[in-house]
Image (cartoon, rainbow, N blue to C red; front, top):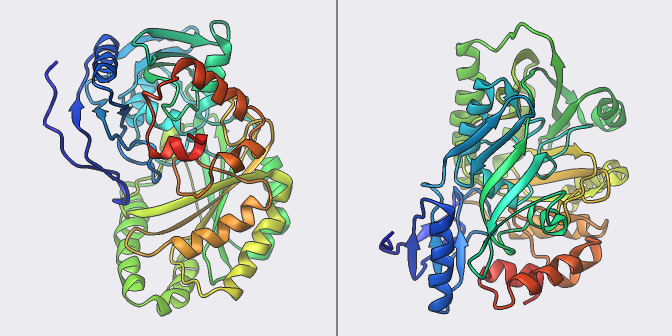
Amino acid sequence: MPPENPRTWQNWAGNQLATPQRAVTPRTADEVAAAVRSAAGDGLTVRMIGTGHSFTGAAVAEGVLLRPTALDAVRSVDTATGLVTVEAGLPLHVLNRVLDEHGLALANMGDIQEQTVAGALQTATHGTGRDAAGLVSQVAALELVLADGSTVTCSREERPDLFDAARAGLGALGIVTAITWQAVPSFLLRAQEEPMKWDEVLARVDEFDAANEHFEFYWFPHTEGCLTKRNNRVEGPAEPVSKFRYWLDDQFLSNTVFGAVNRVTHLAPATTPFVNGISAKALGARTYSDTSYRIFTSPRTVRFKEQEYAIPREDLVPALRELRSLFAKRDWRISFPIEVRLLPQEDAWLSMAHGRKSAFIAVHVYHRDPHEDYFRGVEELLTSLGGRPHWGKLHTRDASYLEKVYPRFDDFRALRDELDPERRFANPYTNQVFGD
């Protein structure tokens, strides 16, 4: 396994860069272990990247960069139990197709499926759900390479503390080499997308949450317009959108036209409220049904930067009203809609929904636009409510804050001290959030 020539790595949004001292593409867990031992011998740190969909520096590798592209095998599929073991570098969109071919599915997922399974898991990627939680709650076992070069497995029965910590471990406890998913029988979802006014959405958010398996909505800043989306299981047959409607709505309008809109507002920010008003009024209702992962996920080609916080569910409506009031006080011109999702509580130590039913508020800007003032203002509001930042999305929080909002944060750090005392898996981002 000869090392590759090092080269500059950057993430999808283009806001994180790294030039490691060397890069390696391991083909097996044993080769990952060998790379870790070799790095230790040279006094280098080790990080495995994914597909670069984190906006934070979570994947930045300064010493040895491990590329996951050759760790993409499907090791086993048990249709009777729903247990499916795949390697860390398998993209989510491939996992979804494999599961579907075997009559299985993930119970819930986010709206992007380009990430590797390990990258999505380690940053606690989630969707929206009343009963079904995020990716960390759908894992039955993990295989990791630890800092001493050993390969271990963990589950609720075997090394349960490591399992609860490492499911959302930011790669700080070990290199994930394989994940065993607890899949469910495949199912169809019926999506109801409906434009709605701001006041009605906020007045009915509890109703929508209780009545739907998956509910989310988007608010277009500077307008009264929202787009609501309700997803619920149906027996079938599937009634997907036509190829033309999919191209028109999901590719042309949501990506091609939206990209052009953002190029305009980037050059002329003052036009943003007017443009958003047109976008909000152009939204149309549609109802369709399809295989679950096709409903959960959408293509995203317009590059952006993102910040997301999880707050206690009961604080959602007051937080949104205060967030909207900030637009009247600050000179913000924001072309991207604000996304709101909901999730039941989870038990992984560093899940953003750990121990509490949570609401997620995500804010975005076009990747070429400045984000600092906007994200800082939103962050000040949401941290005043005990908000927890998404590990893969931009934030400024450090260990002194995070230890106050995560009940098991100190337990995580103690386990890290035990497993990686020399900080083999550290980088500037882990130094920030864990206080090294």
